[in-house]
Image (cartoon, rainbow over the protein chains, first blue to last red):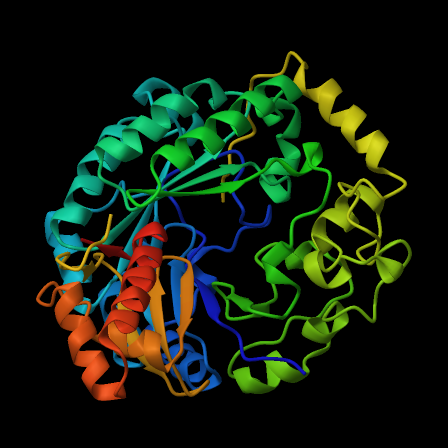
Length: 358
Length: 90
């Protein structure tokens, strides 16, 4: 039986001052004119709370570009939703942050593109961004909100990981998220400029394991491994349509932020159909829910209800079939070829990025 | 280390609430939903930077008519787990 979702990602806008080359937004970004208005998002919050959602992640693009953000946070908090803000922080200042805190914001997650300003500002293609993030991070804890530092790591900043961890400790972060790039959308396009060597990945892996133990109880470290070097696939989104839903800036409901890359799925619009019915009954959510859709080797795998076959978008991108076993799994017939490709790209002489742009 | 004299508090940004959709108490934090059973919810209610572990234990031993030493051991274990998960400070 399908359970109620736990979390909703509200992608309020695709506009963003940063241009990170691994952005999780789709290649075809939506312009401001396609964004939904305040009344729409207030309705989404009402429907989500009634459905049993406990956490709302205000995201984008850059969600602080929306003037109605304090109003949306106030409403979410009133409805019992735990409000998280996923931000680049470069547009925030003390007054704006105070308004969000007073609206009930519980947790702010700030992205860092490196430990050094020079590295970070080049990756985000935004001069002065790193220093601005540092200033805002200090304000978050001063105002009593929980602080997460999010660091997406890859070949061009992985050598700064020890300093990134130190930075998060110095900022008194409650939580650090170290996420190797997941290769969808913009990141897939930039893969050869981002893929770390296997050796660098193993060094990072050992470092995170050691620091996590040292920092236990002070700062938690969540770690997302680079798929291509993994043995088993990740339990993508906790399983398709099991815990999570994503609402795009133009109001469509997705099982994950990258699901639009899968052709043939129709994502329904909030307003055209109740969110409850979309979650429990829409064809796109039913398509890869549970285990009935699986092929060999997933269908006979002892772990099929642990990892749910891995990532559907990655299966499409690398195997050409969204219902195939995620090719990063060692049981996939494509696993060896994927690993060889990753290792070849990791030593490629590619440094330039295709920056994310509208 | 948590002792009977420790005075625990929920860490900043951690919230306790009743989840009416699932009919249970929960702790909510960044990327976290912790379902609390009746005992865990009762302990968490008193993790408020005012009560010591000894006081929390005495209150609960009286309410549940249980042996206070056993309750205290349970409270220490549970509060320790909250600290290790980064959900509380002491």
